[in-house]
Length: 182
Image (cartoon, rainbow, N blue to C red; front, side, top):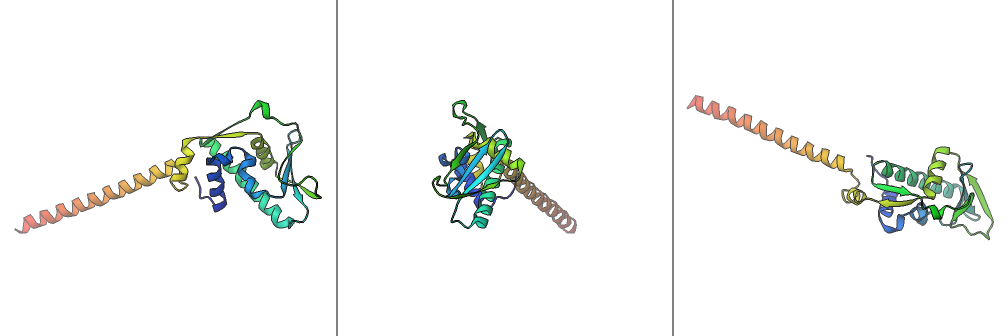
């Protein structure tokens, strides 16, 4: 796989715990004062910020957490670490809003410009996540995939075998020289 940032590792741990079983619950600690308006017909996402926030820094922070979270979900879904599904009873009407921005305060909206990330965000906003035991193992192995753990183990075994073979060759040569001399 790849090396994960500290924030991504927090997201992965939340995804594995019971506090990250949906996109909203996964990103909940980072979205104070922000809501998301999702339109499934146009595949657009708007960020709604309460006024009074430093908009530039919050926008960068929210964009980063959204991009990281949907990419992690997609990566782990593609690799079989999690399964996503839609509860048929829970599909909200479009457009809908979720998040933590107060509805009675003045707000500023921002349309997320990347259509690929918007589609992933919309897809995962309606999904629930089922975590496989493989994700727990991945976290336990310090965010290294099983394939990498296996490859590292094979590398160490191969290295030990090469050293043992080299030692046996040197011992054999020394023994043969010793027998020739005496």
